[in-house]
Length: 353
Image (cartoon, rainbow, N blue to C red; front, side, top):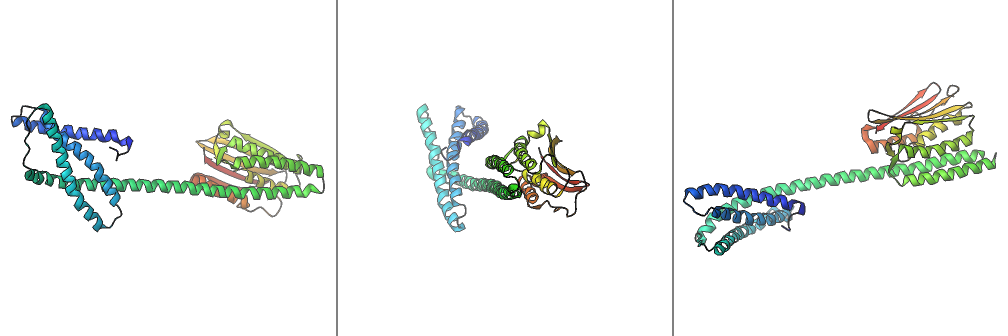
């Protein structure tokens, strides 16, 4: 039993018991018709055979496993040696148990002569050996296929994690570059204001670095990262030019999504509109759950039509990054749509909730 996994030992013993009982019940009928007077004998005969076979099958299964992948001549030679050993072990173990039990109960037992046993039992053992080899080969093949499937799934998960990590790593320098660029534009005009912006940026980077250590978090935690960024942008442009609106229901805030997913889209909403617009711009972020899916809308709307030189319809590096992250995480289940509106742009995301 040491050759079988612990979780399969009890089912294996149960299977052998059921087989032994079925064979014993059939042998009991013939035994009674032949005038037998000890009903326990058919059970002893069948269970002694089934018990020994059950132990030998485990060793045979291990042998078939070791021979997998070996040249066929080597496998044939190994089985040619193993078959007689299997038959001799079966005959010896089976009749040894019977002789022991008969001796314990004080009943004479006279098996057939050894040559007769070897011919009669050897023929049955050859058929049993071949059958068990075929079954064992099928079991090993199924286990190998399952292991390959598990390995493939593990490799796919690891690849997705590596891809997500690479894409998330791209976000930090891209976001940092654009933010520092904004700070540099006011550094020589208002030193105190630039200092406040740097302090806000430092706080934001600490939060984003902490979030980057996690593969995902809730939308509520993501919004907690977006809020200081928008505060930083309002400090840069002034509240008279940038109005912020964030609305998300409780169900949406509880949905988990990849960390640092919304910073780039929100940054694009500011960079591609507020920075190029002389009037007031409202950047809004709305989230709600509907039919088991999370729907996010990030929009920028100005007081006047968008000036010339429309932004990249793909949204630039930040939104290409976002599309790749969503594809890696959700596959075809995620939807990203960027469209122009009369006074701005709207990015719509739809993810499994």
